[in-house]
Length: 313
Image (cartoon, rainbow, N blue to C red; front, side, top):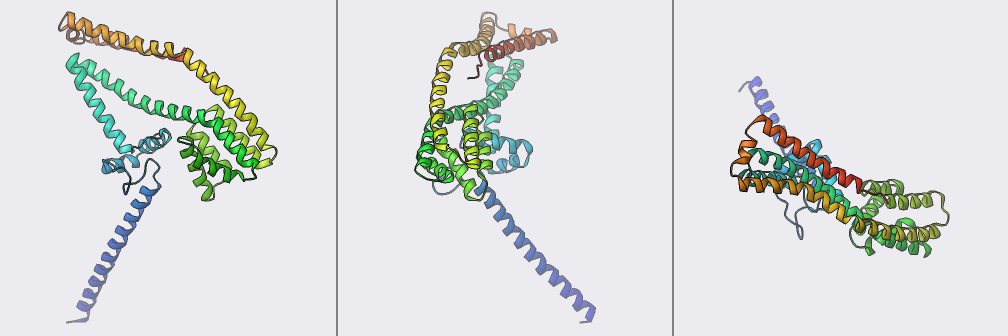
């Protein structure tokens, strides 16, 4: 065997060995990266002992790569729901298809399309409602949180230690959110940045006041105990005021939902009295335009009622 042939065989063998090593290192690195993403994901605990098995992992990975998926993951994180972006997308698609089929069978396919768009808006509103609900529950716990922090600081504990102790003593959502703050502080993040992230996740005036008080006390010192005592009393009074306002506006909020439902009820009654009336109405461009205008007016009326009943306390 000549020298060129030996050199060629050696080069081919060396290239094959390097290729096998490269594929091995790539697969190991990819597996480590996926495990790190699973551990660092805050949308829920990874599948394992004592954790819920995640569904649709392939869809979830594809959704997370997009800008919408990353924004959706942040929204789900603020709601406290134990779902992944992929599960939310699949559930939304199933809801849209179900709503379209039901409404198209009861009314017409044209109304099925409108109902699908309404269901899409409803799924987005569901996340907003869950975020507002979690924020409201956190606001209700703020007086107790301020009281725990005041007692801990009065006992001589540092503010970081007081936050970690409050995370252990309080129930969710305050306990979980303060746990995230304690984890950020444990890995070296500053107190100002950790509290600012908390205020971004749960936006409210009361939380901003509490965060500002803690940040100023951490920077300049001062009578943090007396400030927290006064803040506790103020938060208790605001909590009662918000409860009274919510009770007074409950009837108006029900009206905002009842007005659009009456319109669809009239359509169902007309279709029952005169079978095929909706098919004739939505079978022409003029009828479809009139239907869109009517739906828009009902929607605008409901939004205006909700807007007028929104009072910032």
